[in-house]
Image (cartoon, rainbow over all chains, first blue to last red; front, side, top):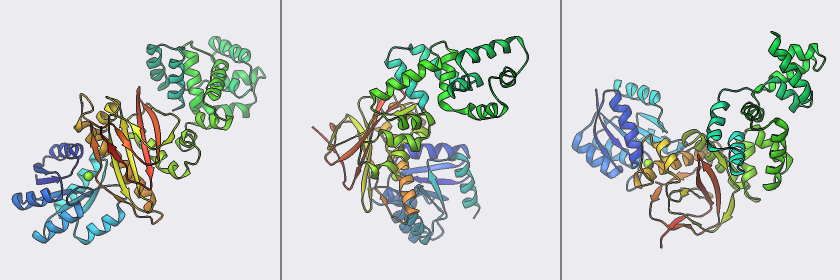
Length: 120
Length: 297
Ligand SMILES: [Mg+2]
């Protein structure tokens, strides 16, 4: 069981992801609604894994990733993307993202990726 | 989708009741067109010949095709051809209407002629409709000079069909500078050219789509329900950006906005593509080259 922080500006997306993660037996330690909020909560809670939506106001997922990685180079971050954000994905890899999950969520895909990343 | 179009046309014309409407869709999921009906449709047999074979079939343990060949109505090759057509969406609709005693194939063909005239459609457009192929159908419902918009509209329609409501059918789209509506979501996608996409409605029109996509029982189209609509829009825009990225065109998605107290959306040339999601009228908005905003009173 891992402690996970969900960062996503959409309540719908947070809810759906939380349901899948909790069903897998993980603990969602907090939800954050934008990149800045996510960075603050990451520092405060030091979760085992953070999911970062890419398209968010204030600070987007890529900006939050770079802050989190600067703060904690070992951070495990899974990026959540709407399909097609190829340039953003390349950037995220450069900043050290562990994996990508495409919306809308498919439960089996989320489970597989989370297992892989947590095993790293 | 031809099934939705016909069922809704029938109900609008008072030819079927609401109960029959629901029964129609239930039957449709079970039925395959019978060879006799297809043979009549293809002009290979008359209705009388098909009825004769059907009656004979009731007393003999033989397949329709074999009997029709024995009677000299069809050749073996024709039977093979008819078997291939059994999954035809229009013929399945015809079969259900015939099974329910609502109308026979000839009457349905006449009804489609009427639909064609009322909607000022060409015969080839009607053939496209009957094919049930979304890529052929969506452009029929867009106004002239909407070529630039076809790709987005088609992709959005397919995504809505998959993620929001199976019971969906398009209504004739048009260009307008602004649209009056009570609630909705907009997403700006930057690029060359940029675009704004939107989904808007009145009252609880967006409720069904929000509940289905958000997997939550919203009571009305409140801000939480609109958050689900905004995420759905985000998925559509993401898929569109994905298609473009294969042509090495980069688009940047901005966070969607949504509000439940608007007066409308405007004020640039926008393709308004209305559609029925279940029994609700929903508008898909596509504006190429400008950033649309909500309007408030
Ligand atoms: Mg987002």
